[in-house]
Image 1 (cartoon, one colour):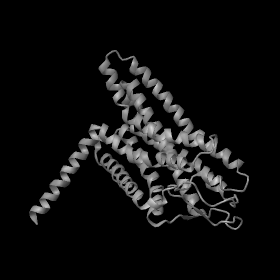
Image 2 (cartoon, rainbow, N blue to C red):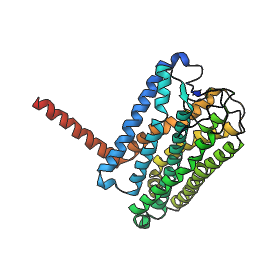
Image 3 (cartoon, rainbow, N blue to C red):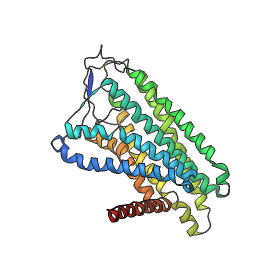
Image 4 (tube, rainbow, N blue to C red):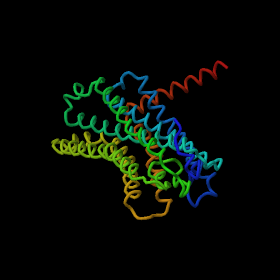
Length: 322
């Protein structure tokens, strides 16, 4: 599908932006971003492979973790390469078609991650509030149905690039971020963007907005249950099972809420503030989620340790034979 009304727009491409004010240091800045991308790929792929291969981990909590790792991979694959292209090659030009496609997948994986975090909140809520009925409530078939429901709801993003096709771009073609985002593209249009803005806000509120409220409700139930536990040790043990998930919630939603509010209702701020918040929202969770879950989840740590020992022993055998 061809996106962008290039015959009516003054511009035929957009220009993505690196980090404002630090253009001369892009090569050096690319080093930590390259390391982050490597950690994201290896960390999330390792989690997916370990859970996929280990039958004992085929339980709801780890199946949802696999979905989270998949969403992090998708989000990073549509953000990091564009940034590194800018840092390494100063390649800022992107066609309307490529930009709208990138925007669609970024926001789709954004919704995917939000929905998975909600599913994980539901998993923790059931595990803490109804421990005796956990296995009967969250069966593998229910988890599969939840996964399919998440995939279907992601279709809500489909109209966004289609609606952008009718817009006329003439003000400027310079985007304020290193990748294409819906609010950022709308700011460059000379056309009436009321329909796009209303639908974009509807998508935001009905997906991530609703997810966030349901996550809060889940944690109210969790907190109520934890406080009703008689022993201090029991309360601490129950709460510790939520630490990794709470980190995922904070990492994902805090920058997103700040960025959305500033874009729509906030005062005019320096561009580097918007860029920093966007990078925190899109780049930090895919890097930190695997680290947090590996550190806080003994089962995954043990499997990774066994895998590393197996790899090392294999290397030793090869060296010995050689």
